[in-house]
Amino acid sequence: MLANSAPRADVVETRPAPDGRFGPERLLAWELEIPLFNLKGRAWLARTSEAIELTLLDGAFAPGRVRFHLTGELATAFFFTQDPSQLHVTGGVSWSVHPNLDLSVVAIYGFLEGDDHYGVLFGMDPKIRLFDAPPRYKEAQ
Image (cartoon, rainbow, N blue to C red):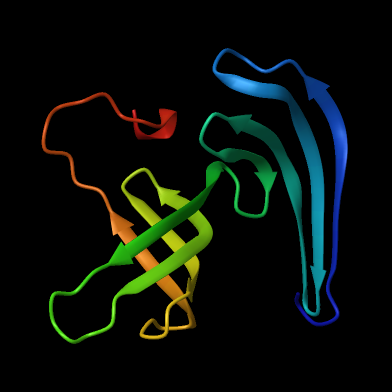
């Protein structure tokens, strides 16, 4: 959390979600007070089958859309050499900065003796189109 910051978000309006979304959409009036700055605005909060979306209407960072995904995996590696085998689990958050770029922060935990026991991974996932397919996000159209 930012030192001496005061975040606030109030639900101003609720509307039924369009097809393909879960639960109602909520209009948020948000504000973040940081020394020397007072950021505020309005955004629609919606859930989809794979992400949480904030559609920024006005104020700081608007217009735009922010998508957050939860990520996780259970992985193992078996070596045919004298190196010890590995078993680890990861979990984190992925942020779709742009339709062609995701950024992620993932925590890793190893269970076996030869594993890295813990760590944090920072990732960047650029996307390249190989075929002419319709864009995934409306703002990319």
